[in-house]
Picture 1 (cartoon, rainbow, N blue to C red):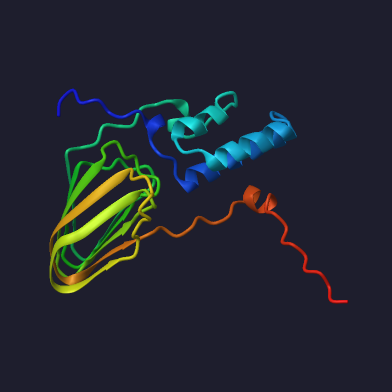
Picture 2 (spheres, rainbow, N blue to C red; picture 1 turned 90 degrees about the vertical axis):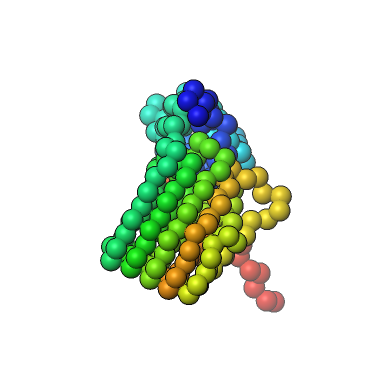
Length: 215
């Protein structure tokens, strides 16, 4: 609706990848001499337990080059009311910091569509997706705080796999309601693959406990 307030990005829930990004920036700052060892330990613990972007941003506030948009205090972009994706013997992907619309219409005749919500900008609590899949595929990569419902999709031929059922107590940042038809293709809902360990995470890894030798 016109004039509708866009939620402050700082109040949105943080993901594991965003926490890891802050951990890496704090470690670099300590290596540059900007943080003492005690300050680093304190901020690392706070980063790993942070719940929102605002809590993470506070850990970077006195450091140069905060990096992420949310850490600089910039509000999220206003989402579109309707977006459309159509593929025919091709592929389409939405990943990184793409802005999630309020409604998404997808038509896949013989191509693939991948929607990765891991680092998506989510400014509305719900997303309606209407699909028309013939012999193509639609894949949703959803973190734990994104819930997808595919029960209202009419399946004439093909397969629907839902492998990302959240725990009951998990806070929900986005609810996805999918409708439409599946005729000869596939729909998959699954968690994203865990990110690869960066150099600083590898450097700070905890050593494995050494098993005691038998006497």
